[in-house]
Image (cartoon, rainbow, N blue to C red; front, top):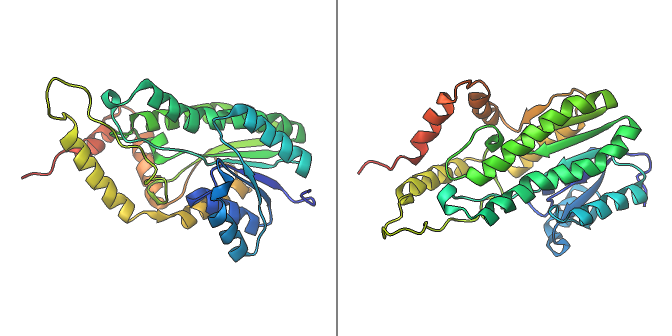
Length: 287
């Protein structure tokens, strides 16, 4: 298989949601797309969407937390296609829990999927892109990579980390022709929400859960946000726009709402604006 001179994109986490639609959208724009997922037995939705759009995809297995598998995947793409022009780090996983409810293993899991996975893949593609003198690495983070949110301690921590890594890397790679960026969706209608792990009450001598009322308020607010969420198809168009843009920016968002939301934090030099906004999310409703 070869790319016939077309740019080659590697997209992770394509079994559903934004990743699925991003892979199809990039193929619609004329790129050769290697669409990866942990379990290729779940590829039916992706292949159906590709067929409907009249495009072909190269579907491969990849668990981004398996770094040796990631190396084999990148080596295979280069061997089969002869080039790799775009990496979209999309695979991710969330968890809902505050610090006392989280085990260190759960925190490590968030780091593995949302931070170390994208970092490892980025490291693998950089030598090829640098030698080619061109390339794009786009990491799908979240508005949670700019705004810390209640009951998203581990998730936001990992997203903050990957944004810091990529922002530090970006300025170094620009003189080598490699564009490193992040894109921050807000609430997106996808399977991501259904895959979020739910917390257990912390061990306590008190039989009541000290966080229950706050969590109930947060989940009620989240349900409202996701009821009006951006579609994963619309978010994917924004991701594809960022991945193929001739104009370079480090930070992109997938919607005007996402832009307004992250702006709250990026202009919040003392932190009071974010805490003032998010505190209201976990205040129990009045009786």
